[in-house]
Length: 298
Length: 219
Image (cartoon, rainbow over all chains, first blue to last red; front, side, top):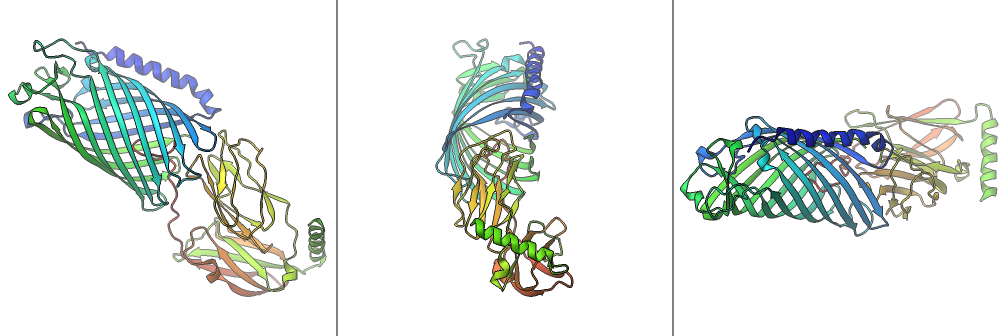
């Protein structure tokens, strides 16, 4: 159960070296490099229902991304890329993590220009490494998205994603009950709309839905003890904390305003609000306000 | 066509040879708050059609730099050939749906794209099928006397035959129609004449280049 600081640090260092080593190549090739940072506050990091179990915390997130677009004739394009991400928690430092992801997607446009309808299918594979190494996991994601920019003001799109997270099973705490609490599958849908107020400011609204595994971290309460499909200790939240894997349905929304101070950068202010109803009558809510910054070097 | 250009060039030389015989139009364009407006196209159409004979350079260019059209606004004389060199490291696919000129340049890099002849007056909106935020404008002028305002909101058209002209202004974001800006001016060789316009501009909405991780932007 030891903290996997060396694991996270090694992964981060290797990824940073790869990115830095590639910089001269990036500078003279078609690759596009981006950077992003976010400051968030999650008022219920552990997805808990009972007030004594609810823990809020702030995070700072930094991301380097790189991708290349390969146009395939008039209608299709393939994008290959990767992300290096780091997330640091203010209090729950055991959840600090680094991740490295690779993505490939195929996009089709029906027609020329910014207002042509489009569809995109993609898959990504990534590895997350946590300060508490028992949360380390492989992350797989398959997405289908489609949308259309109606005019210069309105942009609409919808996305479906299947997420699979594969962590190493932990020791059974309860005989017969799996200890694989941190592996999760989920189906996610989102419908999004953006509205431009002027040439540098736009509003964004997303309606979110999710069905699948959720992990609630709580103490030893009777209500949640009889519902989970898996159970494991979760010392990142304290010595008496347990992670319960439940099946749940989540509805929510994300709303934000984005401002582009330059053509290459974007500042965002937003909030995400989620309501989850899980097995055994376990329900929880969370709100995540955030400040974001995105920069694209080319 | 070559004869016409040669004749026009001859007329130019003739006008140029007349000491003090040319007129000059200066323009200043502001918005209703007094802010000086760049990228406004000033057009001067002589009432005497013969005065419109003038040779223009055989080719113009609109470059693509940092995934933007450069310049953002390019006025050209009707019939001009325009090259679309690509100074970026990525390929572009330039197109226009505008009635004044519909065209598409298949994906290309460098300077290999064929020039496009703009043979009909009007506004041509340029886009790139790969980079949705790229937008540019070619104003195809039916008169050879035109200029584009700089950042200071000023433009000058010189070497014009003296006479009576209809002058007007066009800008990509102007709310009013171009025809409502038309004025009659008489230009003579005594000195430059200055015309000022005050335009109402609507917000220049553009597809954002950076859309954030939650968005469906490029790519």
